[in-house]
Length: 68
Image (cartoon, rainbow, N blue to C red; front, side, top):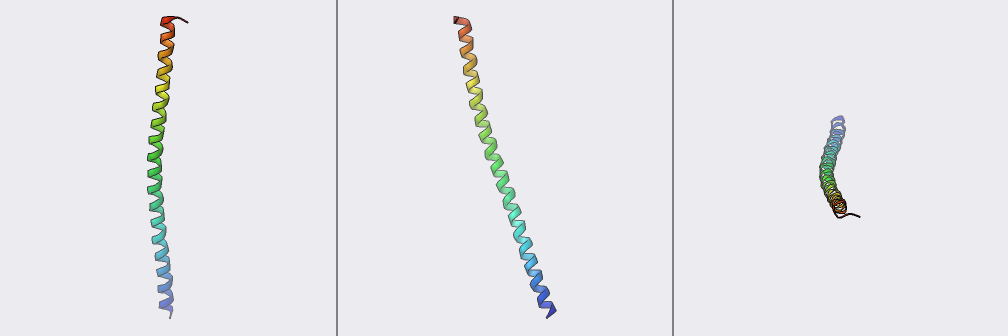
């Protein structure tokens, strides 16, 4: 009688701990993926910003050369 109760508790504990390990692993993968996507987006934003700065710099240089 006691052994079957112990087995039931043990199986429940083991199933729950395995489930929690899977959840933690899934969360880790999601975080890594979201970080990768965020870094790509930031890189795109930096390139766009840098491109607009280059255009502004070129237009300022032209204005200096040609006059106002």
